Length: 134
Image (cartoon, rainbow, N blue to C red; front, side):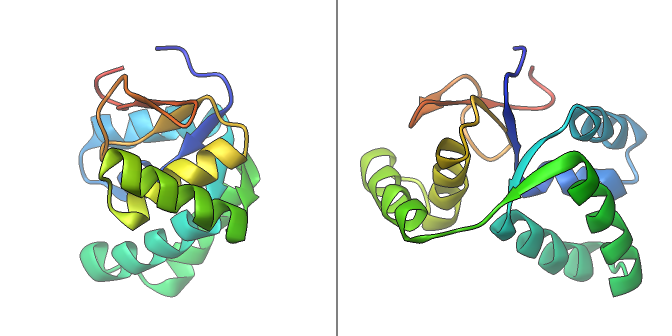
């Protein structure tokens, strides 16, 4: 699946720090192509990176600087929240996954790189792409 304008989910960014070189390389390839992340993605990255990878805030800030160099950062607003509620209700996703989809849709993304949703499914005009299945 060739992405157009792509939204990048938190799990892709977390692979940048993965011990698995193949996963880290694939995540880097996606990031270097550029894309969009939301403030939610940045916050989730900090939370999970601190808890699971034990990275210090200095290293996390450095990684976030790289992400922000390659990606547009989109804020969350009430319209995104309202769309997320609609996605949550229609597709049965968690509110957090729904917010990712809604942020991607509102930012004009055609592709959402993630491992959390069904590869190939289109939700709110955004096609889900698993970075290892695509």
